[in-house]
Amino acid sequence: MSNPSNKPLIAVPIGDPAGIGPEIAVKALANAELREAARVVLIGDRSIIQNALNITGTRLSLHIITEPADGDWSGGIINLIAIDNIDMARFEYGVVNGVCGKAAYTYIAKSIELALARKVDAVATTPINKESLKAGGVPFIGHTEIFGKLTGVADPLTMFETRGLRVFFLSRHVSLRKACDMVKKERIIDYVKRSVSMLKKLGVSTGTMAIAGLNPHSGEHGLFGDEELTDVFPAVKELQAEGYAVAGPIGADSVFHLALKGKYNSVLSLYHDQGHIATKTLDFDRTISITGGMPILRTSVDHGTAFDIAGKNIAGEVSMVEAILLAAKYSPAFSGAADSGKV
Image (cartoon, rainbow, N blue to C red):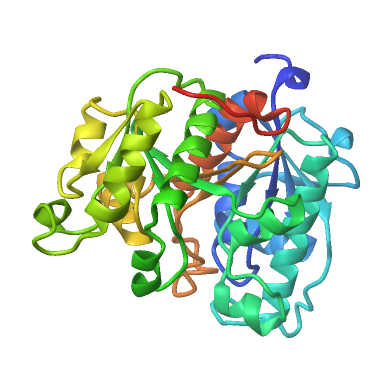
């Protein structure tokens, strides 16, 4: 086995305690490939993690620490920074609970604190529940917004990666109507430039980024929808004039397939479901979210809390393992603040 001290150190907040996050986290830590690639510190309630160990039958021992540097990497150990904020007498799996939402936020905030202090190399997150966040008085809709606020970044980038397909998102958790209104020339130019910078950090310095069309067949020259004519195509032309390798608009019914085959190094999806459907259909379990444009790296599973199966030892850990492995792979590139550059 390689020297543990040379392995990236990844913080994993356990997510909503009432969801599957704790289960997939402890299952992932039993994975031999993961142990070879990274050191992992969990952040969460010790009773919840002990429950997860009992439910899953995972044969690992808890080691409570206060700092990541205090971890025991000898094997068979879960290193846990314990934030004990769950009353087990009132706890219930699979339900929306403001206490759990607030607890999940606390775990995430601690992981960000550690990453900003360079006490860990990256953060790999587990699922949280938007309704529980709201019930707990947490004023954020999701992980990306929390990371943006706590790292001082107004609009972090989201990129999905699976099987070599990379997809960025022009908008995330907004209505489809609002997402269409956000397809503006200036926003596209800004997102492409920042996405190219992120790709360079990930080691992707050649190739062309494709911009997906918004309307069917990219609007057929304005026959049904003119956003491509008024905003997408002008953004592409301006970016090309500045030296960026970008193409589009490319019909959304083919652009993801073309990128998967290698014609494009990435795709800018113009709204949430456009890119989510493509990546998750390709490989649901191995679609991993990477949040960039921040001074720290965050990867994440891209599935929910699965309240219907929480606490039942049904949830698989493949996505969690992949998220941690990807965090370990890319963490050296995110040792400093985001830079800029052109493909």
